[in-house]
Image (spheres, one colour):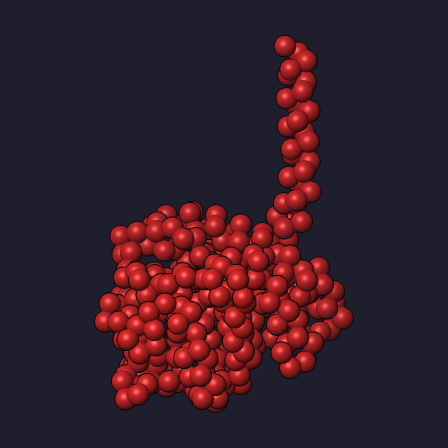
Length: 323
């Protein structure tokens, strides 16, 4: 019995040592910011400062923040569910922050259970129209988080760029796609992976038919009280990428799309993500957007397998090279 107990204790010690070695660096460096409605945000967020970001700051350089929108995939009114997911998202993406030498910011927006039609993690239409105070204009809440983080970092002697990198895949790709269009003046570059079957078109109409948000921008000013800034938007380097075998289509679900808007996209551009790909590329090209469309042959809906394309794109942006 004593031998068994010793083995169990030894295994536990090994487990704790491995866990400390794996989680330790991130757990020691990540900062938790609690929701602060007085400062403009009603959800928590996490901030991770990579070692190279610290070194750059000490050398007097301005450091860039990388925003990774959270995407728990779970409807729950419990903030702890989404905080836990955001923490682990940050843990996984810390390697990207380390590679790029940036600071990582991950919001922990809830994806509500009762008001399930508000797909916060995709920045859908309902997030711009809801009267729920805690979920109102989470795009502006994210900007408030960024500004609060920058102020805190400045007290540590870390000066940061007002413009951020933003990346996402699937629902968080939709968030990154739409946030960039809503606030191009705050985005240094964006990478958008598999954005739910249709990246928002930066045009108001197609073949004489109106494209309301998030199909397009025909009613964007009505929803936000701010006109679309095409000049600022077209200056943002973007990568929109997807696997050729990816059939993940958010238009099939009513939490992220109003049925009539989804039907417009299906009718005008195709019934599935791959069928719509070329139409979207041409619309972006004709609108003058600084966007690369990358279709990876044979790949499915697999963020990990495709992450390298996002990271490589950001490396070029940060190096000052044309992506």
